[in-house]
Length: 522
Image 1 (cartoon, rainbow, N blue to C red):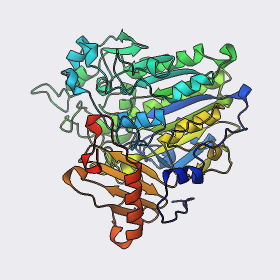
Image 2: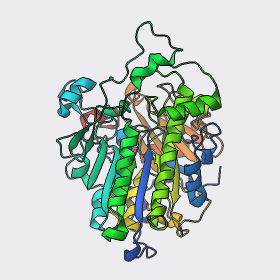
Image 3: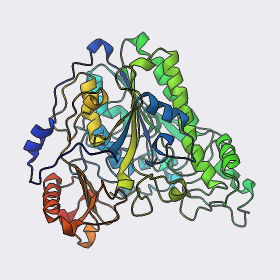
Image 4: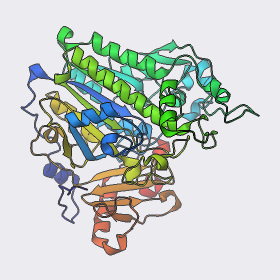
């Protein structure tokens, strides 16, 4: 692991002083001239592990196009998601707030509306789709970039509101949306409908409810037993066509305006569904394997390893096509592309993270990966490519998180950085200038019995089982123990005391009842 940039004084630091130390509102960069504002494409994979890309050490799954982005740009080794699960991570990305200040701090399916988990009921009644909305006065990255004359679009999975509410993409700063409004509906890649802006677009698929299993008496070794899970129109194909169409229609060489595309692809989140050519490719590579019967939820699959690898290679193939389009339109050299993941890899649905070494150097078994504030649940790959600005084949050990994206994009667009962000622009790191640093990163997660975590230089502290009354910290030295196996809290009481005070000062009571942690005073 590369040496850390941060030197931490073991004293309690007030929020005001922290902003002064790290230049929370650093001045706008003079490097980005108004007439050459770059297009921005932010690609957010879903549940992709730190170790699932070739450029991060993966040796089973092939990702040549993403690896090429890393070769042409910068690979970050210490980048963190906003949360260990989907909706809150996306909220923190879009709003520039850490989990102690953000509105959405966990997945909330807004179950008070009715039978929200019934796929058929949601098809019949759109008011059952979607997740808990953000406040109507929420300011997102898309709102800010609009002020800088960007055309803004999102393709993929939203998960931060519901149809017919104030918290749809078009109400939250985006000019264009195509994809899944609801993350529950994204539990199948052959949905009955997607959304184009605020209107349903029906696909040529029948209803196969998520989590359906094999028919009774079906032979699990017979590929024909799985036919009902592969329907007519694969959502990834349709969404990618819309993404390519957005870039074609908003070509800055014709419109005179740069664009921002937030590509929130659902993959490789389970269920295991991918076009057959990729399954065949990896069956040839891996050989025969035992079927996955759905005993760990989601759909069964005859060749689970092949399907999961295929889902990642499917995304990689599309990224290659996207890059080629940018080059064909003479846009590539003035486009910043960032690729990352919303949290660590899952432990269910037949993905087999241990077989793939999905966490790379981090532990990702259940309790350490998705859904938990250990490194395997939070540390994610991030690649940034921007020809002529980012040095090719470069690597950064700068410690950063999702709430840094808003100030970064604001600075790139020539805007003042919002005063209420918890983030620090990493634009200087991208372009080889002196980079301000975080004194710490803070997380809380009101699920899995309640969790808090702090990254402070080489130290990582975690508090688990808060709902069970536990307030003790586990402390790890990440320079020596990246798998977080050796709790050394008893050896460093002064570090534990400082982190306890950080946890207290960074937690604001949650606005939404489901996210309250009464043990923290909510």
